[in-house]
Image (tube, rainbow, N blue to C red; front, side, top):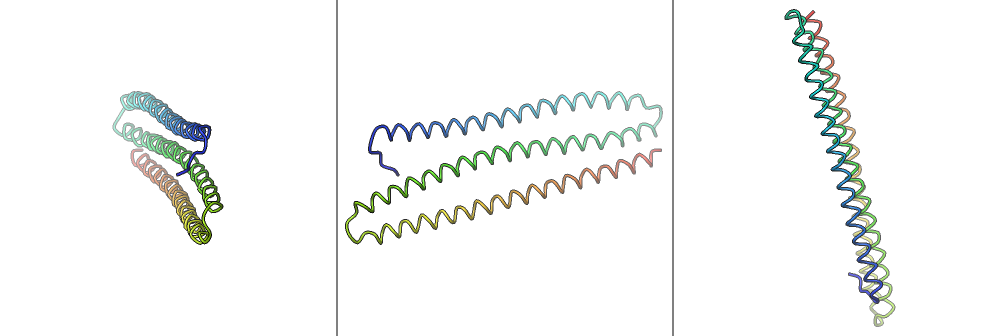
Length: 188
């Protein structure tokens, strides 16, 4: 915890905290706004597609044409569902990334303040206390190193998960496309 020597330092620290909270709130609102827009656009598209698909199916002249239309309509629906899920994932990932950057900046500032406080304490500490100060600095360095390692590992896991989601999505679209083609050929 940082000790404040002047009211200006205290006010500056409070201002920084308020700015951080405002940034977090703005990020949350922006993500929520993007989710709402995505959901409204998706709902509108589903409604329009549902009406168009119903008209097309009702206009079928026989059972074969009906089955062929039904098979042909499946792929666009799956592709839209995949696109929607991709968009949700992107919005969530970007929001998480923005929060991570903010947290990293806060940790860097905290580390800087702790280091400054330790240096100041070391200068005014009694003789022989330099060993204790060095031990505290070493512990802080180890904690920072551990945090960096965990942060890098989390980023790698996120990248792997993103690659797996993309691969699974592409495989799903391909499988549905192949199934729809097979169904169309059987209906014809």
